[in-house]
Image (cartoon, rainbow, N blue to C red):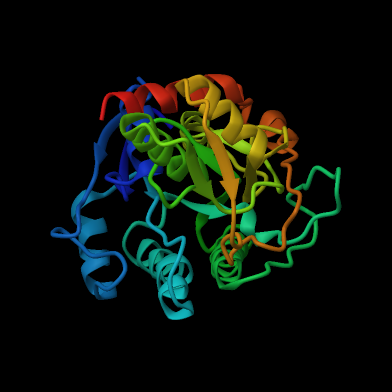
Amino acid sequence: MSRARVLLFGASGFIGGHVRAALESEPRIGEVVCPGRADYDLLHGEPDGLAALLRATDPDAVVNCVGALTGPATHLVTANTLVAAKLLDAVGTATPRARLVRLGSAGEYGEVPDGVSVTEEDPTRPVGGYGVSHLAGTRLFQLAGESGQADAASLRIFNPIGPGMSEENLLGRAAARIRAALADGDAEVTLGPLSAYRDFVDVRDAAALVVAVLLTPELRYRVFNVGSGRAVTAREAVELLATTAGYRGRIREVGAGPQRSATVGWIRADVSRAARELGWTPARDLATSIRDIVDAEEKR
């Protein structure tokens, strides 16, 4: 795909903002169109409005970074499942040649045996509404791609981290609380349980994979893992964050983890498919990502 025009939904969000930056810095990508809610509300807008936007834009590719992490089941299904179905229907009607990419989640896998790197072909057993809603969206894209209904792909992003992350994410929340503790002289920061092993992937590496998917002429597969291929405890990541920020107080763990992943004690991505098919490998290690998170927090 040469000098492609890309329609990007969710460009104002954490991941979407980095995807936009990656697309705009890629010389093989031409125009990047980023509609806001005033242009079209992807969650609640009528399908005809989406089809009209697609016809007016005539994109070579459509990337969806809109979704929900939390909320009641109806909201999660609307944001993560129904949006996927709406995009498939509208693209099929208005711009059937466009490649369609959505962001899924490692939450689609659910519980994984300790020490195992999960592949795209492994069983999917999500443990909550978040993972179920994303799995349904991914499955719709997979079926559409395999049947030829649409040139669609879904990217299962593990635990995205990096500058600009929100407090909806563990490390974003930890960074904000550590920054506040440093400012106020607090000797303690309180977070939830930190014993689970997670695969933290830099959001800029995730954005690079979106670009790689768009620039690959033919896709043999319709689902790709987006991870670092490494697993560390959340505690280790938070402690590294505190050390990097210069915080020497206590990190106290209380309460329960988020419902979407509380029972998942271990997760690590096998990213060999993306390496083999797309020539993509993560470029940043955890220490680099955390250094950049701290630098971004210090500038707020």
